[in-house]
Length: 79
Image 1: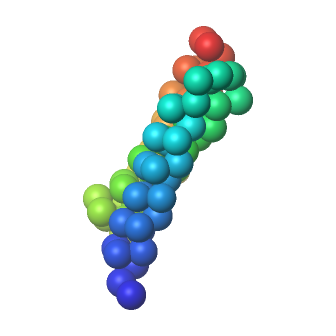
Image 2: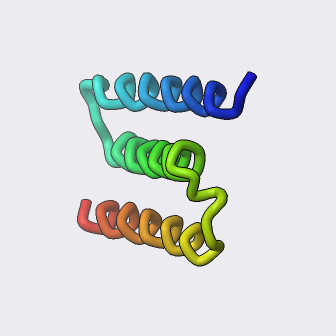
Image 3: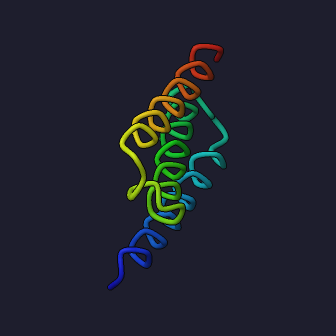
């Protein structure tokens, strides 16, 4: 299988898991943290696989990863 196809199925699996977590009646802080982490993983998968960041300069790889990490941490601190 092509890497893009495998990434697509991983994204589908992560989306379904996010939907199942969000449909929980007792959404606790752990569920919120898991949803944010899964969203960050999905963002990185799309960026590296479909936006060709994996072929970019290492500066962009590191800066993109750091920015998404900072955004997730800021949101989690606010919660």
